[in-house]
Image 1 (cartoon, each protein chain N blue to C red):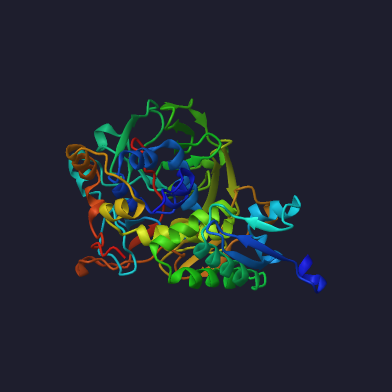
Image 2: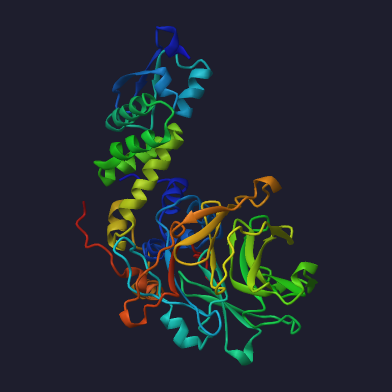
Length: 324
Length: 163
């Protein structure tokens, strides 16, 4: 066969899932260099964002417990899902806290146990590689129910940012530059003893998180967005559904919509694509069932299946690049 | 458009092995390369396509005619593309991706490269080297090290059947 020109080969490779790409690094040195190259990583990320199929799937086990703990765990995989990732090795080697603080594009933010709460580990779930960094700001709270952790991609600087937010302060870590922003104040609305719940989710440089207030025996929640390019907060309208019992809920971003799931069958969605929607277009819709691409996977250990255990499997992309 | 005047303009395309093909201009201009030639007035006689052989060009023309007969309905176009590519083997797909690239036909390029990726996804490293004509330039030690680094990606790989 005629040799494919480099640009054509690049187009074909950009459509492969990361599992195949990592395997094909063994084909020859030039494929390895291409697949690991900065340029290709960017093209692949963009391609994966646009495409709905052929993406890696990570399993997330969300468990309602004392705290809102969660674990990444590989579990029994439904027939139609073929790719899985491995994390056991990393967990054993690194003695990390089992919680995953937040995730984005196949990156997961974790940390060491309590004594080292400011020592963060950013794991690339596809490659099994990780980088560590330290947060110098002791003032920012670190309990999982008082703090929002987020990773999001800022296309304007082609970098991931890790954002740590509590009621009063927040700071941004620039992954590629390996530096922290100064510590900044959060909007006044964050004050008043709210509870930050669940994990943040991010989409195209925007991230979303939930702030809860206790009002008249029921839980009022506020949804905030954070524009990672301009580093500004934005308040979203309150969901029209009020959950009276329990605070377990999670969010996911799929196909330009933010889904706020109250349990396994009820959720509301709002359009967030692009992040710059006009005020009047920001309306919550009811949605029956679970959001697309998230599914409840029955635990392989039947005894542990409980109503409040969700296993979210989500098709998300990855970074091939070692070091992220 | 010429097609609407009642006398559709026909272009003659010539492959690099000197086969001639007639195709309606309205279908042929799906290729930006051909469209530019038409717009520049270079399409009076025969359009030589030096990088495409007759067998591949025949296939591309089938696609041009098929897809341009479908009205603006993305779903239908997609299902036509899927069907069109479903029985093509790897070598044919590789020829088509080169042709689509040369002819600058983005919709065919997208579809064929996605199809090739789909065929490759679960294949072994050896299969890829054979099909792409790539020589392994690793030493055995280097190759073992690269494979060891991403061991899990070698699970669930199809056994080579070379088809």
